[in-house]
Length: 164
Ligand code: PNS
Image (tube, rainbow, N blue to C red; front, top):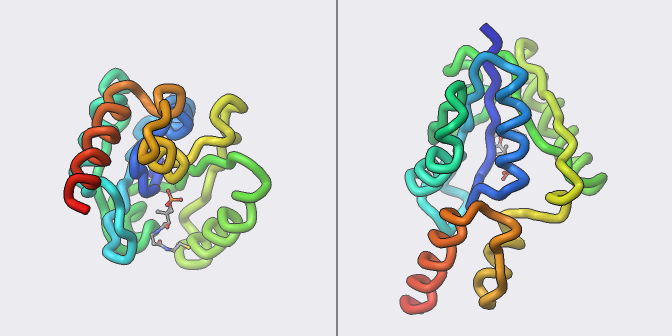
């Protein structure tokens, strides 16, 4: 059974991520989307919220599982009995960091290979950071994230602004 892990922050999941999830899930028997819950990062959404949002928009993909993890990606990959890490490459600017991560992960576990998907051109400029920034200033994010996710982002940002 071919199992792959797609690790990331997904804060929030974008249409670009979703495109990778769809294409990667067609290639393997099981795809585990791993939502990083490391304390060093201060995300907009909790890991549980991020997991639930991804579950919500991938419900039609029967071989996709979504789980939070903390610590190293390779340890999570091992826990999932997976042999592959999936990542998306948007532009050449992603390459250096992705290459470094893939090589680091492989040096930690020779049983783990990283598969890169080139992002669909329509989504090449989208990032979770850009989504949050546009939403923060009241811009339209409907082209960047699924509708249900956009609602969560606007609500969360609205709550955040009220707290500040
Ligand atoms: O969506 P992101 O933030 O680009 O994903 C980055 C992620 C989660 C894949 C990366 O930060 C990661 O694997 N973090 C877990 C810690 C780890 O394994 N570090 C070593 C890899 S260099």
